[in-house]
Structures are given as structure tokens and as C-alpha cells.
Length: 371
DNA sequence: TTCGTTACGGTTGAA
DNA sequence: AGTTCAACCGTAACG
Image (cartoon, rainbow, N blue to C red; front, side, top):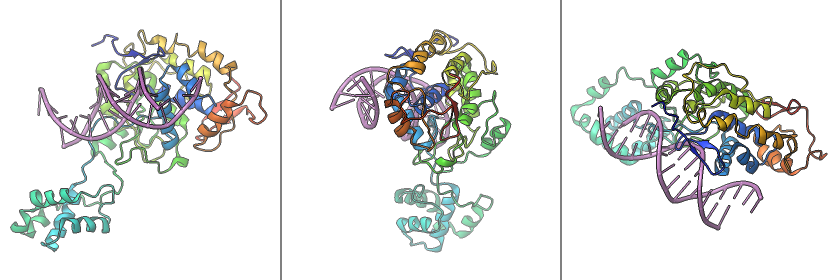
């Protein structure tokens, strides 16, 4: 149970837990470094994360503005919510001869559903058969009385997958109902699963700064890394509902990273590399310490791990690596502008004017000075 | 050399 | 309580 048996070592020497997301701190580092103009390949080497993973995280960040992993596990929210069933029932009652596809059209037409969550014809047929079939015989009264107390809120067009009460309560309980997780609590940051596209971006520009993300999970990050495995599931689940809309977008957060015990030093190291890293010195955290892959032998992953040593060379004089970072103002283009152009430019290249304090697209202040 | 893509083995959580 | 299923994960390898 308490064995620090978690984690495997990849080809780059980095520690990872198969099947589990990288720690948020590392995810954050990836994005930060990318915004500083460091090439993905260098980030990969420096952080010892496979380039595929770096690529994926950066791509997702570009797309969603979130560094957070997607929601793991769970099931796709059912489209045949009570409300939908109710409407179907009503349609059927109103027109017993109605076809499933007509019902489907009406669900769309009446904005009960949208194209993403409208039940399939077969689903409607099944509903008609299993849930409403009897009603066609047993009468309308049942329909009318059967759902009297049910919420008749129009089904949210986008899978809101609102977690019933515990969601909000949990979030409130954790003090993160506002979407600004309380440090030390559990800033669960995950892309709330929104089907069909968990990565759809609705408001990138309105994203909270990455700093907030960092702060949010930063607080949880360290603590998370020190969370005992046995607590992972509990924490993870409990926190699943917390920290909604961390990014200021519809995505809600989960906390995938609680499972990665990571010593604060990891963040410190990281912070040394990018001073403005929101994940500063962390309180020892509220988590059970000393567990996990990133703390044990994996401690090297963050402490002894070349983030420092390697990072230093990289950050200051890494060959071909423009550590000066560029002006990054656009929300997404860091990859294209910073990562590509900036990275390709040798330090000192006038074309890329370094600024003392970079304010990244997301408001992440990355002072290049204090490095 | 770099990086996007994908198979793979794994974890997770709702049903 | 245990299983199933479908989501996600990061790595490794390919091109």
C-alpha cells in the first residue's frame, strides 16, 4: 500500500505513472517553457517527458487553454434524462402515432436537446418501448403525474453533466465553488468532461490565467504529490466536483493529479526555472506526505532531477534555445510564435525582443529577469 | 532532428 | 460487491 512502487521510468529517465496524468506541476512547466519559446523537444528532454506527451499537452493547451488532463473514467452522461423522457412522453401522448425520428426532430426543434445530446432514434424507440410504451395504454395521467416533481429544466444543450447536489456542495465545501480553488485544499484541475467534445473551447480568451490554474492545482499539486495512494481515489473523487471552471470556461475541473505525490521541491525547481511560476513554495500541504512515485526514488524526478541542472543550462545558454521568451500576447499563438520563431531565434536576435516581464496570453506573468 | 500521430497497456469511474 | 464499458492517461515507436 505504502510502497513507493508507483511509477515507471521512461526512456528519458522521467518517472511516470502509467495510466495516470502527469502532475499538474509538470504540465504547467511544459506550457510555461513552451511559452518561453523553448522547443517541445527541449522541453521533453528537460522535463523528461516523452515528446508525444509534450506535444499532446501543448496541443491541448492551444486548443482549450487548459493544461489540465481530461476527465478520466466515468460514463458519458445519459442523454435520456428524465426531462428528455418527459418530453418524449409528452410528444407521444400528443401524437401516439409519432415516429421516433419525429420525436427526435421535435426535441431539437423545441430546444430540449441539441444535436449533441439528442437521443438517437433507437434510443427514443427504446424509451418509447420501455418507459413510455406502457403509457400509451395506461393513459396520460400517469405521464402527467409521473414527473410532477421532476425538474423540467430544459436539457442543457451542451452536456452539462451537472453533478447533482454533491457537486455543488462539494465544491462549496472545498471553498472552490467560485472556481478558484483554495490552495491547500484541492485544486482539482481537469477538463471537465463535456461530451462530445471534452476539448471544445468556448471561451479561450476568457480563460483564467494559467497562473490561476497553476495556483489552483499548484496548491493541490504539491499536496497531491504527497498524497498517499490510498487517498488518491478518495481525494480524487471527492474533489472531482471542486474547482469548476478553473479556466473560466465551461470546463470543470477534476483532479487528476492528486495522485502524484510530488515534493514541493519539484515546484521550487520549476519555479527557479520560471520564477513567475505560480506554483511557488508550497505549504507542506494537507496531504499525507511521502508517498508515491514522485517522492521516493522519484524524488529525483523533481529534486535531483535535472530540472535544475539541466534547466540551468537550458535556461541560460541552452544551445539554440531562446530562453528570453518573446512577447506573447495572443492566447494561442505561443506555440507558433514563441515556440517556433522565438525558439529558433538566437538570443539577442532583435527580431525577438525580450521583455523583462512577460505577460503571457493568459496573464501568466513570466518575468524572464529573475531567472 | 523535430514533431504529429497512434498502438499499447494502463487507470478511472459511472452504470 | 464485482464487472463492464468507455473515457482518459503517457510512453514508445513510426513516419
